[in-house]
Length: 231
Image 1 (cartoon, rainbow, N blue to C red):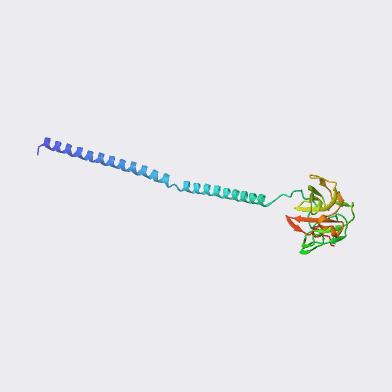
Image 2: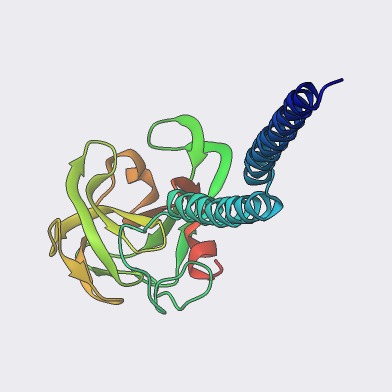
């Protein structure tokens, strides 16, 4: 082989080797580039710190909101179940616990009874859900406790009546008056005169007396029990 041909062949081999080396370098660069890019994407998505922080924040907010909702619900329930009395309650007008004054005197002519008893005037049997206090025409009738006058009216059966809200949902009706010295909207103190004694049409056969009727929580109750008195 001539020297000229040998040099040409050698140059071709060098060029081929150089091309192969360049191709390997480019390929290696591409592999490193895509590998690095893909790895960064995966690390960003699966970054554990981000997941932990998100979970902790969501949990804290949920717990706080739940507590606030429970408190709000309890507050609403309490408001709905707590009813305000028609007259403010004080130490002198709590049923069964405070001092009460007799409305006319201590003489009881007919006591409270939910059983049927004879009504001599009407000649029939009916419950006597009140207490009758004996007296004379014109005697002063007084309030058994502090209260707000809610009504003054004439009744065909029970004559002139004065109705007083004594607080704590206790309402008393003073029936059989001849005259009233109070009017609707007046506030009375315990022992204040509310009128004078008269007659009761439906109980005229029982003589002159005051017919005291009481309701507690809208339920008829024995006035003597309310006042902690006995016959």
